Image (tube, rainbow, N blue to C red; front, top):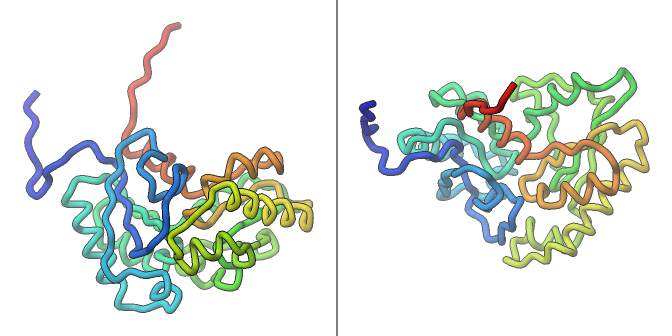
Length: 244
């Protein structure tokens, strides 16, 4: 079988392209920004000028920066593109329209799938980086219709160690402390809303603590990594071997 090179591509076998903020934070295993999180190769692209503060300010000039980086990733051979901050989702429709690979910039894109598995009185608990910045307009802008009565939101903004690492960007993280903080938020949310039947960890830095949260709550836990793994299995199918 003859295999031809793609123009502009100098490495191969990286299925998911990941757009990265300009940030100063250690990304531990389980974080979107740590390549050892995945059982398959990924390709990272740092977007110069893309900061958390500019995303929170909804700076429209960021769209071109993200789009340029997305085009670079496509030329480099990735089969789908995500990011390491859910606030990139304000450009979800525009970036997906411009690029010729699947684009999935927010873990919140899993909400319709999750909602379809709920009973009429059951709810989804969402844990995000900062509840004060949780934006239903952002969700609607992605084309997702959400019944707000089905959603219960809690943020990590009052957890001091997480706040310093993720918001202040002091460059330090103790995973054990951060896990205890995430557990505290998750268990408090479930205690407050006993109708919660599944959890979504919205922030890309929270997946490392998903297993501990599931053990403590007994609930299914969705996050950025569950989404990325799911898309990977769609764009890179495997042949099955077994016996009858």
